[in-house]
Image (cartoon, rainbow, N blue to C red):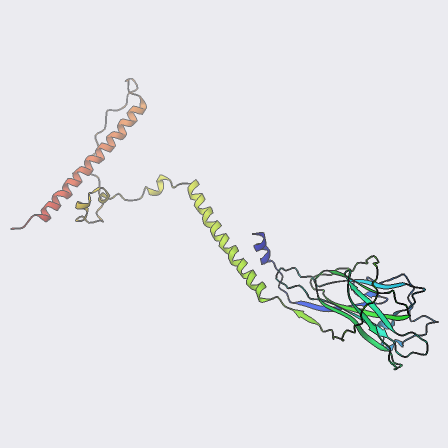
Length: 346
């Protein structure tokens, strides 16, 4: 029953799913939660001695976090941040609407003996999903807004993404620009949470995800949800009607009708006649007692031996006897009329 009642208050507003951005420096632009850079110092555009310095015109918010991985100095490097999925207050909305997209700045032929190869593991909620590998080309151009990781159809809960590199015997370059994830801010606003560091996984395979455009998504309540609420309303209405009739019946049992409700009803002789006489007697004929007063017993005297209750009983018995005699006379009259109607005529 509480479940049925809850269906009546289910919100059916169209949800507006939008993209939220996690900047490498500013963090989540809505919640303010920032990425965690662990174990090694990451460089910013303000770095004076860095050899790889992409122009900031095409960089998101003109900031990035870059690092050259060297096993002899930094055997493990990682970036970690959390993001909140879409949360619906409904049992009818299908899960699997959350998605995450990560963007790097990729370098190519920057100069002789300058490392520009990128290799990183992507671990989501403690499970290694894939490894991204960028092999530099001969072009001197940088690749901005490069989609290096994407994952959709995620459960609608809080997630933790870990970007890491470890166990590689050569130098590697990583430049994190920003990430995007889908969120419905019309239903819930939850601050992202910082998570503790976890161990990395050594790269094993090489895979390059295909760029996928991020488009705004609109989710509407499915037809099943509307049908469920309608059914719940009908059940609730049915329960209310049954409860009303049960309450009314209970009141009638606790308060039976008084004798006064039947005082004005007329008395008919037809109910007292046998069936063979009743068939020739008009049903609408009502009996009227004769005007002759009943014979009453002598008045009560407190000096006699008779008690008050005995006196009252004799009065009631006298009244009943008088009524019976009147009914008997009426029956005799009706029987005589019936005999005349049935006698043959000469």
